[in-house]
Length: 395
Image 1: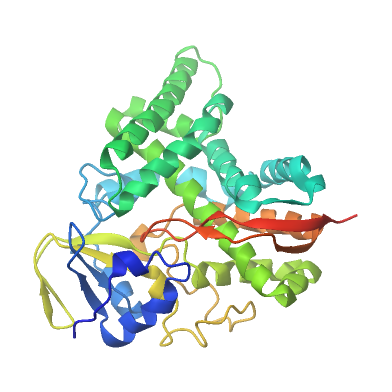
Image 2: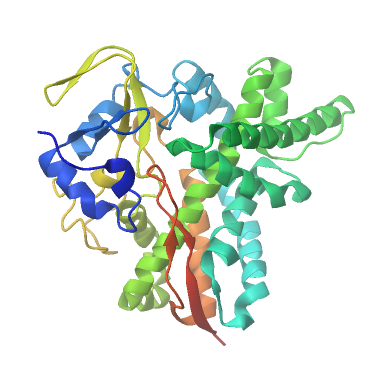
């Protein structure tokens, strides 16, 4: 049936998932006709996973957003290119490699908290949730310190275009970020030519791959860009929304402070409850039928991960934020996607979130809202751009 529902509008609500139950129950394949370009929205868990299990039919190569883009890499590419890019980057994202970052992440988190802890009040997003992921992904890639100040702003410009924003601004931001990446790769190539040691980072992997012919210059630039953007915005959203839910449930915050071993389960619940990526787009390579509707070739379909993660067919009391779910439910969400395109940076996002909340709960007491939070303006991403809080430093 047709549902009188404007997805591009209502998915920008502060609590967008309040609307998604209507999609799942009454219109599991919704057509967003008034948006330019028009697109379909798929909202049930089983339907979404079913499409993700068909990467040859439901393709990534037209881009993850509502507009069509060419020449993608990794998460915006299809096989065999996707697999080639993933194999190249895998050494940097192995659990052992990510674990080696923990001491540095812990030190950076402490430094950030040191800079504002005595103030007793501030914006959690601006003070910690935004800068920490930016510094973390820059550390992993090997982005120079002087470049780190600018790429947060450029990343925000690029992400905004996913939902049909200023496409020219997207291209400008993408070009500038890629210039940073290429400069870093060229520096590592010069070190290699001089037989000097290179840093153990992603830009060094890209430098070797260029020399060996595994990737070309365009792929090198785009891979670095994609990791910078994807590794920053989504983790910022996860950190902000998780703290907001704990502010709503001070009993859970107190429990996590007393039992930090529960943090990994709480992080999985935060990912399920407020999926940082509401839903990415796929495009069909051949005519398809979904819920008795024929989908023409080349149609954009948004896979609404945030709705799937609130599907009562898969989660008990899905609209309750609960950190003690059954083991069969913990981590069985699609916040990081599913299948061959499962987010390569998921271990880093989980590590960052655990480190941040271990330090916040250990060093800040009596945390409470100090004003109205503000969410981002997107129907692809869901996060906060402002979260004003006050606290008492713990002794």
